[in-house]
Length: 398
Picture (spheres, rainbow, N blue to C red):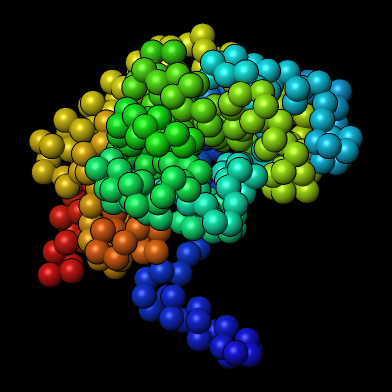
């Protein structure tokens, strides 16, 4: 099919008609110095309730200072891939510190979380094998399985019994059970204890992408694995993202020294891309120290989540059952969901509308995310505007 200008226009028009065309909003600055939770968009100050800066440290002065100092020493970019000349002391030290933090022998930095998941799966799975995944896994895990040449099988969301059924039929060829720790659109947590038991029973690897849990959950910030009491033997492959609770950028995989070395040798998304800027690695080392030492941030986050959920219940808001910083409000119908998001923005709050194909049609939602950097007053004000906005847009749809 020829992709003429008319065809492209028609495709874009189709997305717009289905309420699925995406648009970016440009932030011109921040209303409060040292916080990304109060952006200025089109001249209007907003309270950001869709950021993944769960601990409120992305603009922490200590992290900023570490980045500035490293940039003065190392420059703005790494200049090459890790296996050429791009691997600096800052990268190496961060890998060692991440390995220690996660209780594993080694860690390997990737430039993005997407590249980490694709790299790990394509390095370790091959044609003729099976990669078993939760149906609601992040796109990067699903795409990694497809690119590996292995057969992708998907079990029902958070259903360990369905995973067991598929494992029994795979004839021992399953390379991975792969799952998100916290599911990014629903905010619920995978049944990791059951999945770890299945992986041990069938002698297969369990890969957990704890992008939204690591740093934000657990007394020590160990994420979903800390909550479940699982160690490196039970979960041999842990992927973490540094652009969420850590307030920086990039990602990593942690595991045994030999497995990490094998991924380094074979992961194309690691080998054939420029390394993170050394200044970003230095900033992440500073943020990791904050994550480890300032447990009060996780306590505050948990308190604000409880406050939000209690207030939502009192107002009759249709929350999904999440105990994490991700608090989705189910508003089926793309037009309804988009209208509610616009209402919130008009009243000073930035909350993203999540639509198909990111979530199944009919399960559209406002994805509220809570940060330790929010105040109680901001949470209460959001709840009031949500109540009014949901009611008004629902009436408009009727």
